[in-house]
Amino acid sequence: MVVDFHTHIFPDELAPKAIEVLCGEIDNLYPPVSDGTKSGLLKNMDEWAIDISVVLPVVTKQTQTKRANEWSASVRSERLIPFGGIYPHTDDYKSDIDFAAELGLKGLKFHAEYQNFILDDKHMLKIYDYALSKGLILLHHGGFDPAFKPPFKSTPAKFLNVAKAMRGGVIIASHLGGHDQWDDVEQILAGSGIYLDTSMGFEYFSRDQFLRIVKKHGADKILFGSDAPWSNACTEIEHLKSMPLAQEDIEAILSGNAKRILKI
Image (cartoon, rainbow, N blue to C red; front, side, top):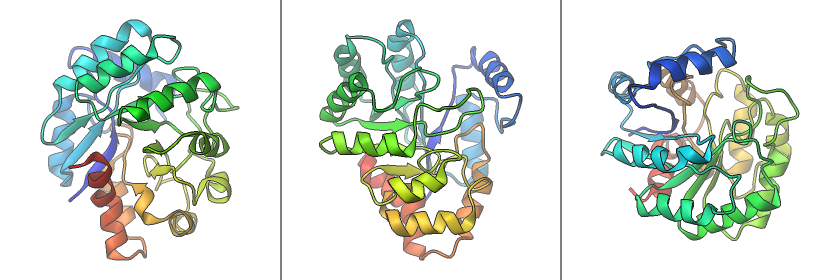
């Protein structure tokens, strides 16, 4: 079984423009592997033997919050597990989190660059704490993003600060804890309680460094993710399966850990 814990889709009527704009912002650095629609994702999942995908929105305006979460809930199926999102620059975050939880969404997606916040800011810590108290999983973008300039607002050190400040719950740092910051992940974040997803990783971090991070962090806290439509999940799966890891560790990364934290 394969669970892709990191994918993005858009409503059919918005997908073409969203893909065009996002590709332009990164100078087409990551050519999309689908058209960004639900049907496009499912087609790739069928072709690549992916059983379940977690779908992640990014809310960049308060006015998007209700509509984005309702749409996310509407795509839920046996094969698609949607997360929600909130706009962090509001004092009314509790009602927005309550609404996401009432819709049955299993988690929230945050992106410190697109949403313009510092990962371990005190206001954000209050938001995380409340969301975790509702049983929601928190998944964050981590590290470099080609649409933005450094210094980046989410780093392995900041993830560690968040982990220390929270009282439990599942927090995920995508891109193996911080894209293009894997030396710091290995030295600072590995071994903490933060989960790491592998999205947009195997083409960038070295094989040896990945193995060192898995050994230090524990395969039980690593989740397979692709960042579709910006990365080819089939290629990512092949990279993972080629690693000299125990079969039980590969299976845990591909699906076991995801099934456990998603309670499926």
